[in-house]
Image (cartoon, rainbow, N blue to C red; front, side):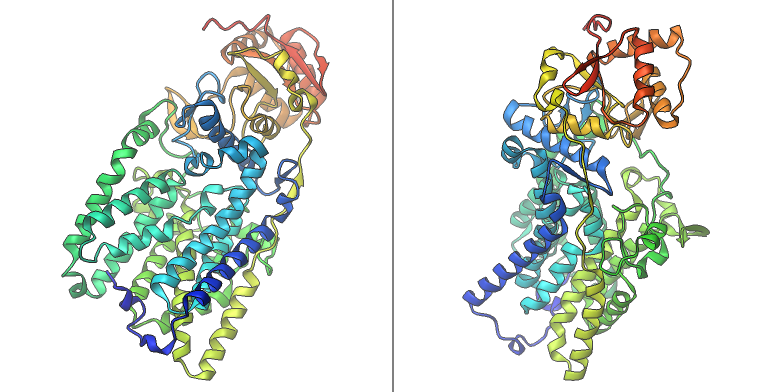
Length: 598
């Protein structure tokens, strides 16, 4: 493992004078303010109306994370179980550990959610995620890896606002909140130092616990990257690690024990508790990195082209590469400048390995699978790896680019004037085109008085649910999810958008929807194709059985939903009664026909 001096390539620190404490503090404050300002700019359109707008590229996850934040509020203010929610997917509930519940963020922010609403908490966390990640990398770089604040600022800027981060800011709180990772990485590297086996191991273990409750997927990426980095460094200079590998391994052991003590039960609950699942609802080769995306620009970059990005990416939230050709050139330049630095070389190797992993089991070029096999095919179905969206492995090289740029920029003062100017000009040409634009939003329909004024309380009795149509599911039931989240989960709902077993006990593969029921399928197909089905006696019987299973008190048709009149006719046919207009919605009171026994 490299020492700090090795990371700096044993350069003469007298070349750059160490800034005075006051100057250093001003530089730190300036970096923080700059990152915060850029974070606000990226989310400015959502800041204008946190509860009245949704992110247009990803309103599904926008609704899901609003639910997650509302759950955190209920944990603090209502004593709810942090690992499980009985408010959604009634009667089965949701395993919150098996979902991305960001408990380490939602629980501390519970007062904000309670007093200002889930919408404010969501945009606040997205902003702080981007800015905090940038500043965290700036802090670690400026204290331990580089001597110049400008170099550290460049590294932090890229790590916090690279195209992958901005694309995930379309609702993915868990993937933009990476501010623990720099400290976690640095604690791992410090385990090589004498006297840090216990102290360093305990600190590292506690950071692992914190990261688990933010995003386990990122923790996996970090562990894999460090594993490749350490292996590459040992292979490049085996004598360098001979003197300290034992205490390094011992420190890792202390970290594992420290982390397992508080994590043993939550992890058991995640993988073996109620509503746990195995695997993803898609094949590993479906969502992968396209080779041509490396030199293209993302939708939200200044030089981005939406049509090109659409062809080369999985979705607007998964543009995990999109570095642009000038940045690819600067990566090569940085590696050349740092070639004598073994740590930088090992980091570049780690980035390359994870980039290849992100390309999946076969190479994809311009949206077409070429049939050329890649190494990931060998591990695609390994447990835990099979829970990952493969293209996200590319978040690792995106971060490593920031570190290489910072280390290279820190070395530039040692170059002759002409080369210095060439480096800074090249860096500007590489960075400016990928700077972010504000994320697009759309206006959300206002909550009807039935929800906003809590008129539902006159119909939904304790232990019963409010059933919105379309049912609150991925893609089709966004309004129902939003109503539910913005209400603070005060009423319970069946089904929902979450990860759970597809159809237990027959199938426990992960799914974004609850197990299908006759009525949910009938309404889904009618809403999708706009065709009136022939409602049979069996359909009516199933509707009563499903509403009973869902413990329904009332069925509410979402105003303005596609095929509104068609769905109204179907529900009326199924229930044998006309709807009542109440508080801006049409509702069917089903307490007389849906009579749960439990």
